[in-house]
Image (cartoon, rainbow, N blue to C red; front, side, top):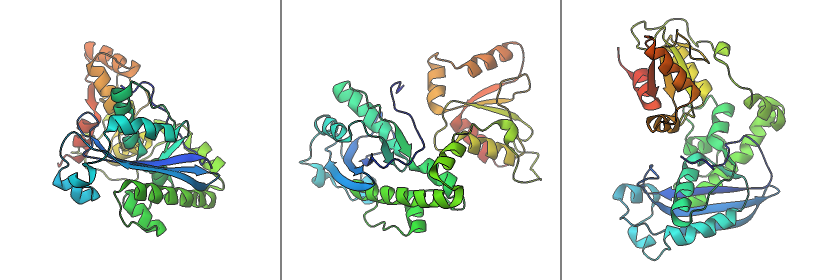
Length: 304
């Protein structure tokens, strides 16, 4: 577990570091960093940059080369991650980190920094994906290229570190404008975003449901941090298939959906209060299923 990882916050600071990394895949435990890039912003203005390719231990696949444009020849003379990553983190310093889906980048940085120097990367971060979902709900998806298209931001050389930093940073400036227009001020947006959503506040977006759906009329409770979606979104999709949501484990609970990190901790014996309570009910004969987010996704997508 990344026990000392920084907080995911919502804010619009004038001083921060926008960062992006490129990797050989999506799993920090097996995949490698092949590019590091960052922009230091001071008083809203680009003040300095850091960019470096990184030589991985393993060969870069054709798919990653096609996606990023980074070839094995390009990284052959680049530094290894253990020598360049500490420099990268020194450049970032104690700044708040900003980026699109930057939680992904931070997980790679955190794990690699621990492995190469036993140091913790604990910077708080602003994940622009969270802001995008709140400010631009009308978009068909919230990929960086889609958002850039909406804001008319140039996407040339997308999937290269420095260009992705620039794209995310430009979008961040546009979010300020959208927030001011739609919410009145950034302070009001932050206040509304910080309001804890309760199950009782949720309503379905439609009136008719497929009663054969596995989650129809099932009471779902969530615990832990969900990957790629907020708690409100998860509850909404349950409501939209005719399910019900609760904030607490009770005898009426049918499913306890556990965020991926907490689910892994559960397997190792580090159990949350909701998991422990669910287990007590199960031992008393209640039919409560404790499932991972991936199993929850399978249930949602099940064809009936």
